[in-house]
Image (tube, rainbow, N blue to C red; front, side):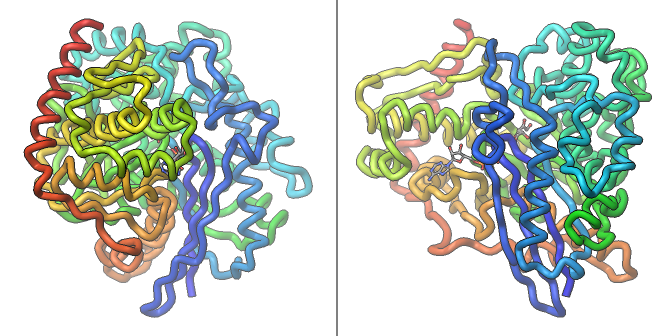
Length: 525
Ligand code: ADP
Ligand code: XUL
């Protein structure tokens, strides 16, 4: 038997999934999550980030992510799993966030003492103690500078898969290097969250892979190599501070002595970590045609596999590298789960009350509309937040619940059309995917069946599957992605959520009205 572990270091918590593969048997052994705010309150985070004084500046403490990994590895060691059977580990992480390490970090990582907790040994490895994360939208000036240096937004998008976005790592590094030149100069390595976490496991600097590196505005999508002119335009000496980029299935090292001696793990192979969305592409089984994935996590995202990079002409979305070596299209919405929670809490509901409100209101909401921009929005780009209502009484709790869910699901669907993926089914993951009343709205809006999958965390499952694929690819056996994902991507009981065809006209009309409402508010902003 071989066990594969997959981690997901996401915005609000850390999840691990263990799968077992044994001569034709495929088992999902366990999934465990810890929530950063609850498990590690000493870091003072709220929803996994430091409460921002300015809503545009959103950071998290990377030491917290390291301590969470230590806690979770201890849990895995105590779980009863046969540690000797673990064949490989990989992981996924929230995308775009950057971790800034001092030049001395490498020797510290290489000499971690198994007798001392990890966090105590990492206290002084940072050149910047906090990491800007994907929710940060403070770097518009840097986006403009990088766009100009690249010869315009269209050129930058064609080369890197995206125009400049505030949360992307290149603009973040550009802003840091200008605001804190001394701290930037004292930075030896800029990691993404994914390569930072892999570095902790192997006890040395881990490389990046194209899936996560394409969220930086620094990588040439075609060659999957750093674009020297973009790197130079971003910050001085950045080339020397960036990790190398390796193919996604690369084994980047073995578990460091710290993990082996402290918890009894064997010398397990560690496969390059990727971003949570590229990992979810695998964990949702989206390796064929005709299927899109929707992740209803802290962010809402919609994505699908692409054989060739086809960039969004409107400039709102992205093309990333996919772990398969091909590409994926993705649109990201910042006002996802936390916006749904804002409405839930504003009307003093729990999730079951939220669901009751959905069930008790008519699809189409009698034409009422909401633009749920509680925080700066990525899609469409909204710098100054503000919730907008049309034909919607703010005191009518059930109508507001329906309005936010319809707004979000219509936005997901409308802003996924640029991918031109003929969609016959949607695979869903993320914390809100357990809520079948929300999924019903998605199915009705899109007009296709929605498949909630057995594993509630596609990103960590995808990481375990990538670990398995990497090990199989090393052997002489032929291995296809379909064979890797098929045994594990199973529909959760009681099955798909079916669209109701009688609602087609209602939602076609509501989507037209929402597009017009959105456009009117954007032109006013
Ligand atoms: P991330 O991976 O981005 O950290 P998750 O995918 O774990 O986040 O999603 C967490 C979110 O799931 C919570 O913020 C919460 O709003 C949402 N959630 C949890 N349970 C439900 C539910 N029953 N209905 C709707 N949303 C839910
Ligand atoms: C994708 C994005 C988010 C983060 C957090 O571009 O910014 O989905 O990966 O999950």
